[in-house]
Image (cartoon, rainbow, N blue to C red; front, side):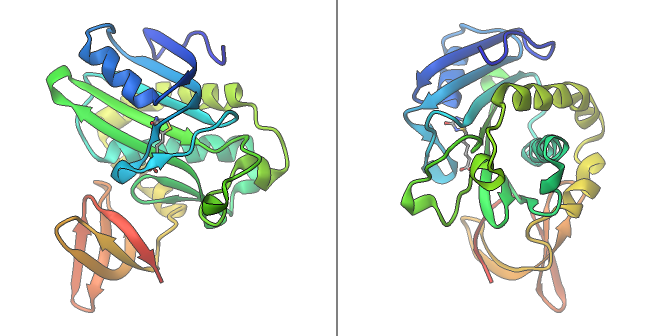
Length: 248
Ligand code: BTN
């Protein structure tokens, strides 16, 4: 058991191996098998899911979990809020990462230009549940070749074994403390921190919003969590969702 109980949750479910902690969380909700806030953790996922229906590599060693949060507001900035808390947690445990660890809008944590954590949030209004799936590449010694340029593990970068239980508990304690603040004041409270560690700031990026592709310079993240881009000299536009498909 990496964690047995926590004041944030009514139930904690720990599996050795399942397809996906987020899928499992959704099944529990759909089948009415769960109440209140809950957490699903897996040592290994056979079909971890990432953004845009991609497969999320989730072998033994990583930290894979999904939060089931009941009755929280639907707001896309909750993913950014979670990213801020994950970033803070990692920096507090490993202060040497202060300058290399960045938050990439809308859902990634980057370590020296490679992804170390991804967050995938979905809201199920019919059940009033938000599922937030978080994957952190902690103790993955061997990245598959096709991921080695785009993903990195804390273990390989720091040359140490990460204590997954300790990291998870530190994050959950922070979440327990900060969730009421986020729910009352929104992302505005975390905007400054995000901008301080913003991976995209001042970069020329290509953003795919599914309706249109935009290219421009990233200025900042605003208080609602939107990405503010300068599309040309006279056109500054906020984006509330989309994927960064290229960085110049
Ligand atoms: C992304 O594409 O960046 C998001 C990846 C989210 C992965 C995590 S791992 C735990 C949870 N279970 C899943 O199947 N996905 C999320």
